[in-house]
Image 1 (tube, rainbow, N blue to C red):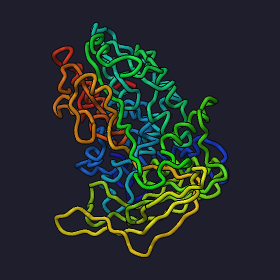
Image 2: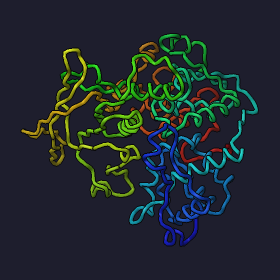
Image 3: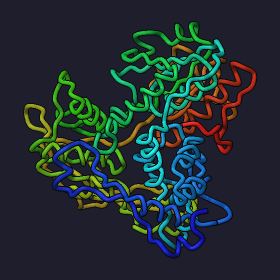
Length: 488
């Protein structure tokens, strides 16, 4: 795979970025493409490692050494076929995935890992530019109908796989446009929405029907769909947001991160009817939560022209290097600095928000915090302890709660009589993704809880296989590790 001595000859290289002062003036993607020779060299770094742990690191089971080798040899169309064999939407994962495959790369044991994600993105973008990604509708229809509820990555993957099997697939989306959190949760500077539209156009050409502005469970009942379709696939995500139940949480200016991000994405899309405006312009912004959503809030606030942006994280500051208790090839919890972090935010770790402060008109003016530490003991979960005498008041006009999600909305589950777990996610058999109601399947975050885009696509693909088997008695759709017929 690659060049036998490539990992000794070439250093890791990834895409560059436009200067901060330029990129914060707009919402477009700002990566600087790599040259063809640079990509070839990066493909050459893939080792003939014997056991490619990147396969197990990737929830999709992508054939990573194979497409790396194809890039090294200049066989870009073959690389695109290999990549699409296990991943329906590499243009999404190549931009948004945190790349667990790279953390599992054998070269990463004692060197910088292969830049797999950049290679993946460049493969699919080359494929689009060359016209290799075209609609491939099924040759024969089964006559079976499937409703997919939710158009995020899990729903889109399930829909495309089931359509490939010949079923008539209808995707229901409650928002105005298709994409789920890809469209209304991820800022355009990370994923321009024409990237979604480009792929959706192909899905439509393949025969998938999309119905937007339809809120299943409200505008149409789930039981009606159950009667109308031969099978249902629920991919609505884990959308119940975690709140911060402290004094002052109801003040004007304490806002859920997803409300802030969704409104801004609509604004960038040219939508003018947005309801009450949520903007960071001229404000002292504090983003509470140190994950990807918090990072997205930082980048968006900077582009709004915030007076200041501060990021709180209740956990301690991770190490830059892999922690000793998280050895290769496991995913390490180490310090990750995003492009948004570098655009002008102060990051504070081991800090807990205790109280929001407001004026007589109910507007947020500040908040109070305390420093915290985590106490660990053998055999016990870490315990959070507040450090006495560390209270501090912060000026704040906009507090964005980027605290993740606690589970799924339950309307559809209630209407269909589906069993849920303690987090309100829908229970399904690990063997076939089917719920306690025959013919109703669930995949993605709505089944496993808040997770990664690669897991969502993987779940959609896996569920599609089992739906096809339910409808037809058996399925030729691939399961993880089997790949697919080369088709892009």
